[in-house]
Amino acid sequence: MFYGEYEHTIDKKGRLIIPSKFRDAFKEYDIEKFYITRGLDKCLFLFTENEWKTQESKFKSVSFTKSESRKFNRLYFSGASDIECDKQGRILIPKYLKDYASIKRDVMIIGVSNRIEVWSKDAWNEYYNSSKESFEEIAEKLMTEEN
Image (tube, rainbow, N blue to C red; front, top):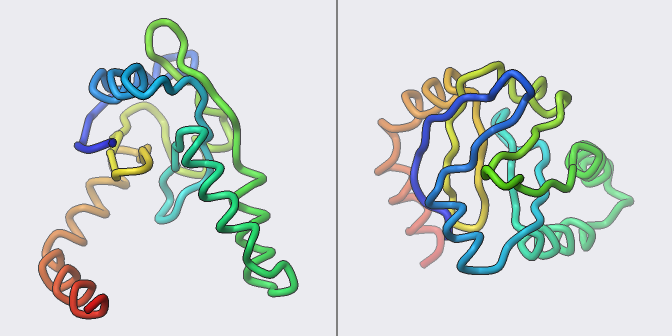
């Protein structure tokens, strides 16, 4: 549902404009509510309400008696915030999440199929540049593991 890379900025009030292609998808699928939380690799994950419920049920099914499960769930769910776009297509990202992802002003908004990722522009460029060379190797390894 969400694809592409978009460069945007956070305004002085801490709001981020969601790319119009994503807002079009929101309208098409009647999506109004989202959840944003700490993501992996120091980015933020933004899920639609339905996708959030799917992810939540997966994580709740992992045994809380395992230390790693408790640690992950605490960090993941304590960072979560429900949000809605305003009439201009902006969302307000909580300060603690901006701090987690080292987001100051310039951001990259990345569509990753069932979720949107929000990165500091510098962190995304670093991640992309360090990962792009191994893209084909990773694809080959993942496709081989599945078959």
